[in-house]
Image (cartoon, rainbow, N blue to C red; front, top):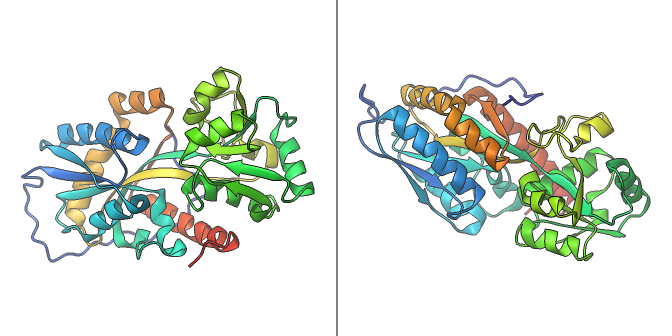
Length: 321
């Protein structure tokens, strides 16, 4: 459990709305939109969190999976919802990519931030027989031999791809000189890595765990400033490079723009209680998810920082539209 380092100061959130607000909120069931399919990590976090909110708010909190368009459909449904507190969303890292890649007219400014709940950093994983014994070895070779190495783990422009590419850029390595082999997620990328088809995979640490335990792959570092509590034996990139890095895939509770302040405060209070609960923390630890908390101001600043960083690296990757 931790809060994010290096967040920029943010202005206090001032929410305005013409929606009438009663003192009895909530007085009916709430819908929580999850923009990814049932059974995935975002869905699991959403359902666990919804169960806690339901207990705190005294009304059913129903998870609805609105999938499609790499998360665009669900996030657009959050944006277009009536700002009355009865339709909320579990926003994900893709919020900070859509407008820069050109897939949708969506950004963090279209939402009322309530709380950041989770942040998972990308892991830098290689084949178990790779000559690279540590991150320094890998970075030295990537810098010395442009276009010789390949990386996989996602589609172009996905959260972990941008985290990996941004990290290389921070280290003075042109991310375009490490050739991306697109994959439908980490699982096929890791299979290709174990078979010797690619040199590196970026993914979350939990996704690499089974292959690491069977000695098919080796994780050199997690691309963060600090070691993950659930994986204390894996070095943080910040230990090696001396540079802070706080980017990856994240999830947070949001409402549509214009959510009334009293409703936001009620939801914030409930969300903080749920996040601090033993049930939620045990769930996150058991799944290997990074439990990170920021309230509205910190969450908004975090999204703004992610948005600016993503805009830069998307442009450098040639993905901007």
